[in-house]
Image (tube, rainbow, N blue to C red; front, side, top):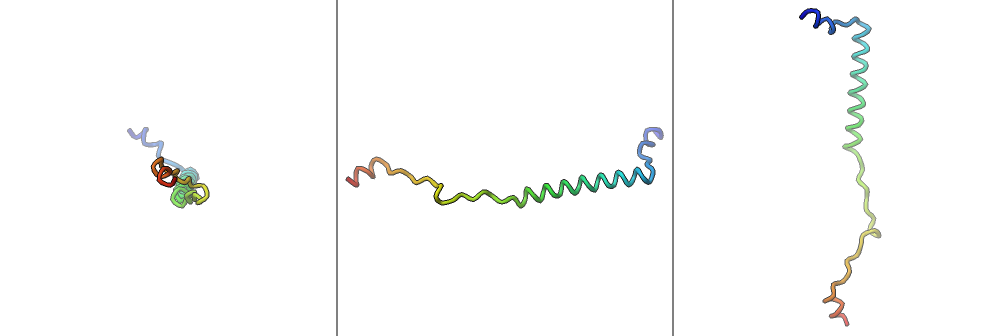
Length: 63
């Protein structure tokens, strides 16, 4: 069992590398999360909205 746990014994330089990699991964995750939260929705212009066509009863009444 002790041999198996020795993989977690890291030197100081290895510990620094692991901490730097963890910090980079957490930062990337936080930035992506912020981009999703603050994404601006696409605004629909009023000119692009379709107008409803009159029903057959409305056209018959107008004549």
